[in-house]
Length: 202
Image (cartoon, rainbow, N blue to C red; front, side):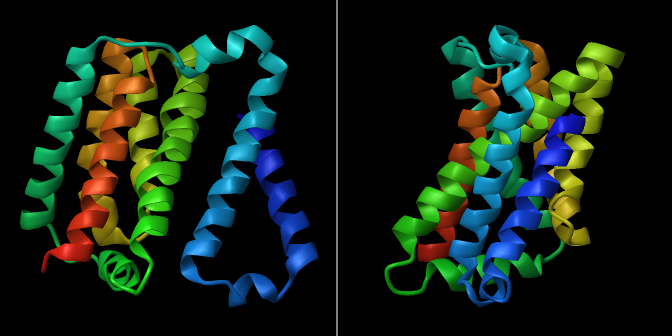
């Protein structure tokens, strides 16, 4: 985990030195793409020393169809429920405006519905969960990784909405010992949210 943090800081610094003010001039999708690319590279740096142990440690293995299907459906139901009863999130308004721009839907689906959930699962339910589980057990890994996932969304209202999803994703990881169900559920949820933001008046 320390290697991940060090790699993240190093990649961020290098990018800042190379691009400088140009970083701030990027469009939101391009900037998010850069951020997730840095996160993914940092994960790879962190797991390379593990060699063959990396895949099982990260939970990268198969799982039965039931937790994948039920997890995805449960995630969608939970997501709709918390979005209806929870506070309004300014960040989600920005996403709605973004995906409704001309020619933005497909890039948004690829980034927010595909790359983002994959990278987030690798970071929180893969790397962080595995690191904590190896030291303090799966219960602490579930709780801490879920809270960290929520806090990473930084806006207080968004944290409140994301925490239940993080707990569900963590439960899927703990129950199946696989990253696959939570990743599929996360992709399904994000893709649905992007499509809904593009076509529905939320």
